[in-house]
Amino acid sequence: MSLIEDIAKIVDQESALCFPAFSEADAWALGFQMRQSAVQQKLPLVIDIRINNRQLFYTALPGTLPDNSEWVRRKVNSVLRFHKSTYRLGRETERDGKPFDRSHGIDTMDYAKDGGGFPIHVKGIGVVGAITVSGVPQRQDHSFVVEQLCTYLKQDHGRLALTP
Image (cartoon, rainbow, N blue to C red; front, side, top):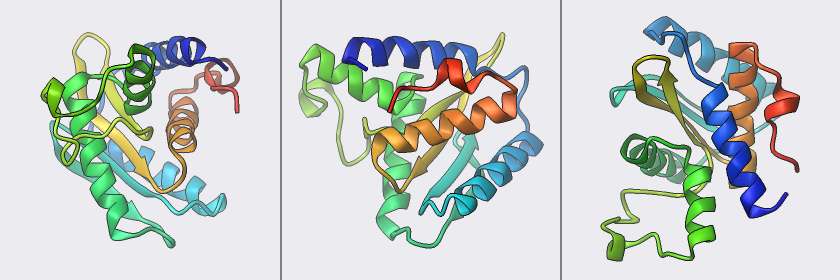
């Protein structure tokens, strides 16, 4: 899939994977589902779900490192600042050929453009939080979140999945 096709698909994912509402119970149910799936797939992931920067779900699975939590923090900051997935942010940065650094007001110690952060978008309200994972290559991090959101929101994953 080309860079342009990736970006278009990610925009489609973000549009389709909106919640009618999102509560603490949703964070727990989605987080638990994600954890179970990661365990079954033997993925070494940190999983973080938060609304209004209030952490509602967190788990660190075997094989993760303390640095994965730091990546999650930076990805969350990017989702909450730009209201888009971090993988889209990275792909758009690559497309535009612009640096993702202090020259554009971004401290890379606090923000990341690597895949794995996804906005929690509530219909009629907007972005209220972030679902974030870290532990595998960035495209796989992003794809895991999308797959889990498709399952939770009963969306067609085949239509929304990025090609490998």
